[in-house]
Image (cartoon, rainbow, N blue to C red; front, side, top):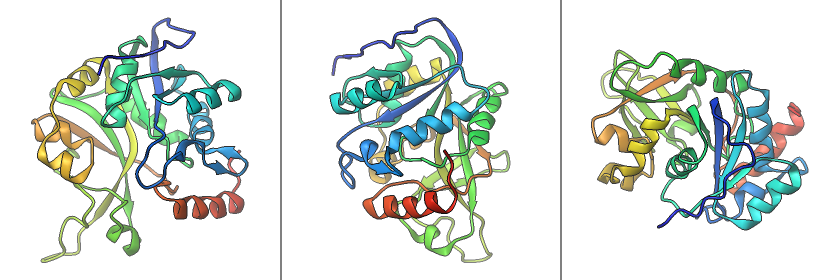
Length: 256
């Protein structure tokens, strides 16, 4: 589809900028970005966490939906209108083509408790990418059995250098000979502009289509994804039930 991007008001080159991809039509939770959490839309909370990070030069919501764009305008949040895309990272890639920056942090719009320190850690890691590594993806260690078995929680297996080997919604690795260490992939990725340009040109592979995990696109095509351990005990909102749990969490530890 041809891009329909509307540029944000400030287009001077930035160092690192956060882009929050938001779409209306999530199959499990339509309208999720504007779902109310503590009296504010979910995307507002994600935007606030990005504002609390210390290494960013700006935060932009990227969306193809006029309702989300209108809400951003009413909340004073910088936004960019894009075309329709298969994944959030494809949407960030279109945004990057019109938003000059040295690197882009994709902060998924369903992570209202994402740690600002984790965002900064991804930004810092982007300064030290090894040759052949195109992305940084944050992860946390999973201790909860329920989360390990939850198909909404993406798990990742890494090599000795902390590069991603495979992502899956299944509980990988299988505990046949030893007690494994399970890692939860966070919706927090960092890219250079060149990496995003490559991402949007690569075709989806069978693993990405099957699992619905966009970072598999780089892995399937032989490109490195550096996994970065961070401390983050938040909650991703994938379903209305998750939103109810997020409300309880917000009441127990106000973050705004």
